[in-house]
Image (cartoon, rainbow, N blue to C red; front, side, top):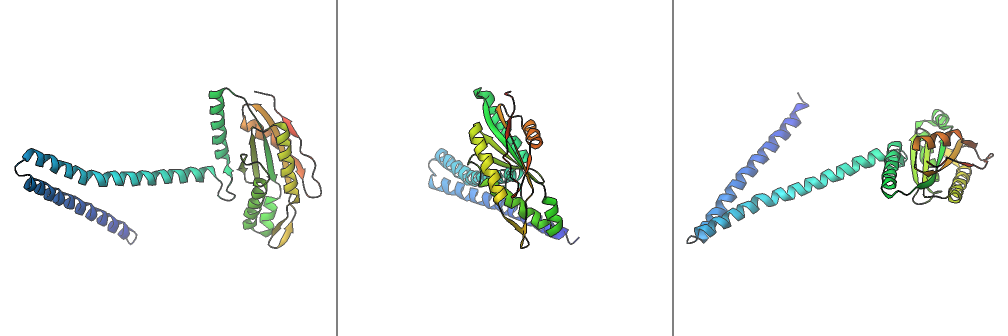
Length: 252
C-alpha cells in the first residue's frame, strides 16, 4: 500500500492541474469574447471574428508549444536509445549490432550507386582477459578492455570503425582503404598493442593478443570477413610480434 501512495498523489495532481487548466481556459475565453463584444458592440460580425481568433490563439499556442517540446524530448530519447544500442557501455566502441547496421547502410549506398567497396577488416582478440579478471577482479577486465580499445582507436584512421563484437574481441572496419593503407594500419596497430604497458592493481600484466585481418573488394560479407580474420589470426606479444599478413577474399 505504501508503494501505491506516490502514484495516487501524482495522478491526483495531474487531474487537478488538468481540471484547473480547463476551467482557466474557459474563463479566459469568456472574458476575451465579452471584451471583443464590448469593444465592437456596433460590429457583431467583427466581434465574433476577433473573439474566435483570440480563443483559437489562446488554445492553439500552448498546444503547439507543448507538442514541439514533447516532440523534441521524444527525438532526444530516441537518439539516446539508438546511441546506447549502437555503443558498448564499457569501451564506448560500436557494438556488433551497430557494426551490422553500419555495414547495411554501406551496402544500401553501394546498391544505389553501383560502385564496388574495398577495404579491410582487422580483428583483435584479448586471449588473457578472463585470466586478468580472475586474478585481479572483474573491474580490471573492464580496465583492460578500455585500455585495448583506446590503443586501437589511437592507431587507426579517423573514419575507421572500432567495434566490440565479442566479450574479448574487437573488429576494426577500414572502408575505402587500399591494400597498402590497410597493411600500414595493421602494422601500426600491432606495434602499438605489443608496445603498450598495462598494469592491474599496480602490477604489470603482459598482454596476450591475437590479430588477424582480411581484405575485401566488391561487397561486405561481414560474417565471412569475421570468420576469415579469426582463422588467420596470429599470436602477438611484446617478445613475439610477427607481421600480420592480410589475406584477400575474392571479389563478390
